[in-house]
Image 1: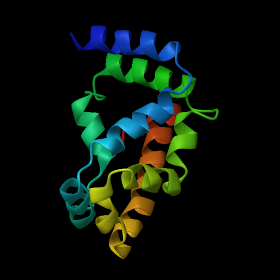
Image 2 (image 1 turned 180 degrees about the vertical axis):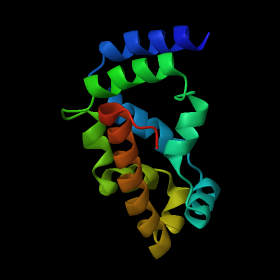
Image 3 (image 1 turned 90 degrees about the vertical axis):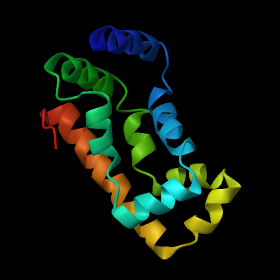
Length: 133
């Protein structure tokens, strides 16, 4: 059941102060050069994908997710810290040598700036204002 899966995630997350940084790294680490190039071409919105994947439109899941986001918003390993630096995202993507060529592209840099701002705004609005944008 989805609620049980979320509760297990909450329990694990409560014991880990670096959870925000790990969530961002996990998402970024999975991006291949083709994924990154496609995201840039299509202005892929990872927040919309997360809403669908984690069923954040479900009121119970949304409430638990908001709680987790608020718990791990601040601090050195927090979600805000991880989403406010495009450089951190860029550096994480650059760890994959195959991504480096795509990262040289001006449009990729523009996309990363847009994506970080968009996701930050959407996550903040969801967590603290209850808005599912």
